[in-house]
Image 1 (cartoon, one colour):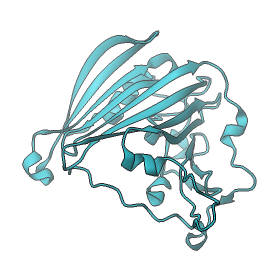
Image 2: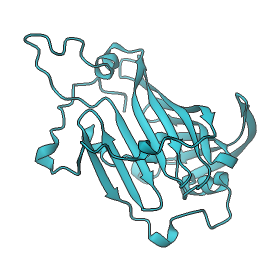
Image 3: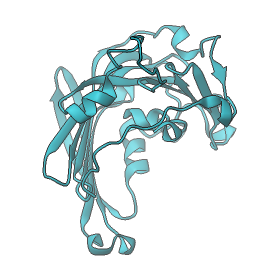
Image 4: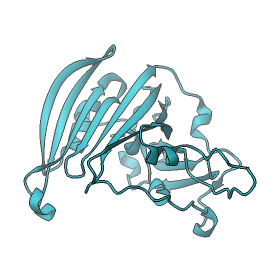
Length: 262
């Protein structure tokens, strides 16, 4: 879990940064609901999320931490141990929260682990000339459609609908299996649905259904406020270690989890 988290970006938070979107600042609440079907046919659900924000320069901030769990298996992973500090209890560091900052102007991805007080800073491979405001004159909806439409996928414009008081434009991408997918070749393996608030360049609702893996992820962005976020959100706390060498990272051991249907 920790290794994968090192490369988190706003893509993992339901926002595909096609380019910088300066002056489209906002703060919002992002909630990701996961439904997984296991081999015994049972459905396990969990929720995580947190603050999502963009500042006036186009930097994107996203945080994720457990919100609730309908499954006892997940609940044990999502909640801090209640007996920490009691005699005879061995305390081990665990990751409960992750913060991701995408600095599009400097081409940096920053992943912060508050539980471990460390931060990972990486340079993305986008050239400096391609950073900055979207120069193709495409709307956010059109740009998002281009980068999510794979060669082995079908595209469908879903038109407009109101989500709460927000008018959104939606589209659906159906991913088809290839020869490498064996019996799934030519069959739908995943369906992705996006509902976009174009003028603010935000995905309001994203639904990803994995037909082969039998899981579904729904990401909602709510409580949107068109205000500038606190600048401190985009700074690494001064007492955090940046890019620690592997032997200093001390990632916790993963707890055993039920195997989902493959």
